[in-house]
Length: 256
Image (tube, rainbow, N blue to C red; front, side, top):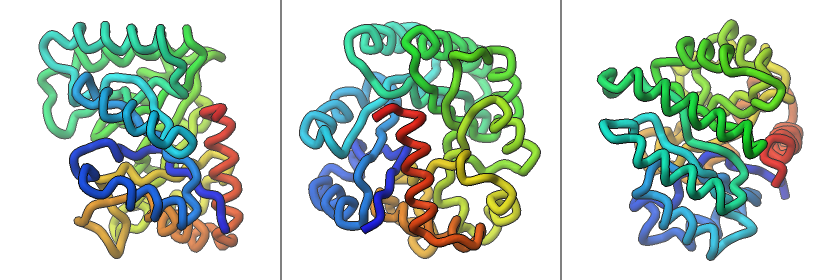
């Protein structure tokens, strides 16, 4: 059986409340040994940590403040993130970043929150997991300004072009590839063949962005094999090779 990793899944959300045991069993049966869970904000911490406590070998948590949760008074949210980073050894600071898709009102605050959390990642020697919806160039620029030899991570849900991919890789970051790779007009069919496997992580972003043929339905970690199959097809290598290399990459990044 292949050994796969889902490097980004929100399986603690209400969409999985009624069948999480079945979802995790199905993931295990399909070879998904580890599922890395990015935090969103104060509302998601308890559910995420409970899941980790029940399935500690399979479900692994991160700590961070999602850019879409950066609103007025976001400092309180950051205080909570900082408290948790001080008292628990998380694998990464995430999900952090920027988002210009839904609302541009708090763009300055998003940048500030991102910079603060990047500094915490450096302090605790943790990678960052970066969200950058409709803001990839702006986020690359932010990372370029903050970059030193202590900063690494992954640009989650990468859907950019080859030039953006090369910039991200040059900064020492991975590309998180998910269901978008299977979309007819996703644009990754011309990018993935040009990217070395050593720079790629697999992810689902469950329950969002389910791959074809499940697009529009609830995504789940077991679908990671569909993403792996698509990458194998685009790169003309065996799916077992994709599984091995991306799992190794996750181990290198997260150290767990």
